[in-house]
Length: 392
Image 1 (cartoon, rainbow, N blue to C red):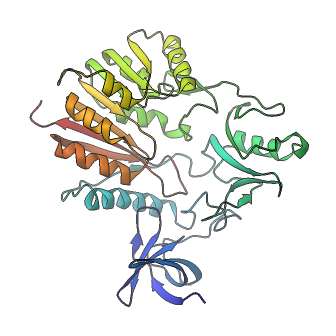
Image 2 (image 1 turned 90 degrees about the vertical axis):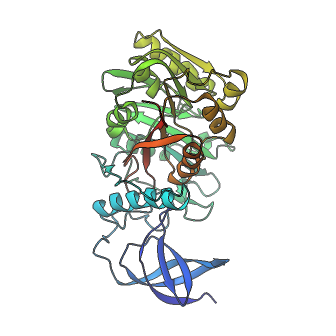
Image 3 (image 1 turned 90 degrees about the horizontal axis):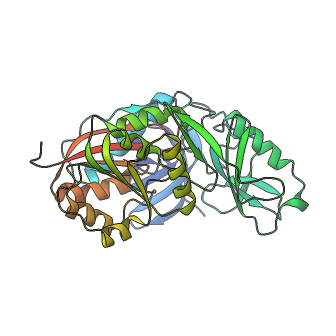
C-alpha cells in the first residue's frame, strides 16, 4: 500500500515539481504550489528522493488558484495551472537561478526578469496531438503515461488552432490511417498545416509576421508556438550587436538569421532539416537579403569540416533543441572563440550545463533574461549573452 503523509511545499524546482522535506527525507510533489499544506501519496522512491502526488490540499497556498481546464491533473500538457500568473513567472525565474547555481556553479546570479506573455491563455499556435485509433482518442499523453487523454478543448490553443482540433475530431475514423500515432499541427488566421498529411489535411505553408518581416513555414518545420513574444525575443537575442561575420547555429527557418543579416556583413546559418532549410532560404529571398548563406549540415558536422580562425567570428547565436548543444559543438565554439555569444534555450538545465563549459572556456556572463513563451507550464525561454573575457 502506498504511503500517505502530510507535507508543506517549500518552493518549485526545475521540472515544475514542488519541494518538501519530512523525517529527513526529500519529496518531489507534482502540481503543487509554494506554501501548500497537502496530504500526498508516495508514488515511487528513487535513492533518497520520493516522488509524490497530491491526494488533498489541506491548506492552500495564497498563490494557488482553481485550474480552469477540466483535464488538469490528468492531461500531461500543463503543470502550472494551479499557480496564479505572477507566481508562475516567479517560479520560472527561480528555476533558472536554481540551475545556474546548482549546475553552472555560479555564486553571483543577477535578478532574472521573465517577460510575461501578453496572452496567458489561447497563445499556442502549434501543437502535437497524440492519436489512439483503437480508443478513438485525440489529445495529449496523460501525466506520467503513454495513455492518450482525449481532449475536446485546449485552454492554451489559439482560437484558430482550437477550430482545427474540432475539425480533426469530426473526421470519420475510417479516414484516419492505422499507423497515424501523432499529428503536428499549426494554424493562423484561417490557414492550417499538418504533418503528416492525411485525408484532406495537407502540409500547407503558413505565413507569420514578426516585426517587419514575414516568415513562411509549415507543420513539418519548427517554429515558435507563441507568436505574441516573438518580436521581443528576437530583439533580446540581437541586443546591440553588429559587425562583419555572424554564425547562426540550429537556425531553423531563419527566425534569427534575418535579423542577423540586417546587422552583419555576412551571416552563416547552419541547419540540418531539409524542410527548414528550404523555408529559411525563401524567407531570406523574400526579405531581399543576400548576405546570408544557409548550410544544410548539422552543427557538429560544420565544426568538424569548417575550422575557423580563432577570433574571426564577431557574434555566434545558438538556439538548440531541448537537449542542448552537443559537446562537440561547445568544443567547436571554444576553439572558434567568437567575440560574443548569444545562447537561446528552452531548457534551463541543459543551458546551465553548456554555460558551465563556456564560462570555463574563457567567456563571461554579460546578461540574462527570460520570456514566458509557455504560460501554464514550467517551461521557459532564456536568452543569455556572453563575451570573450578580455575582449572589448
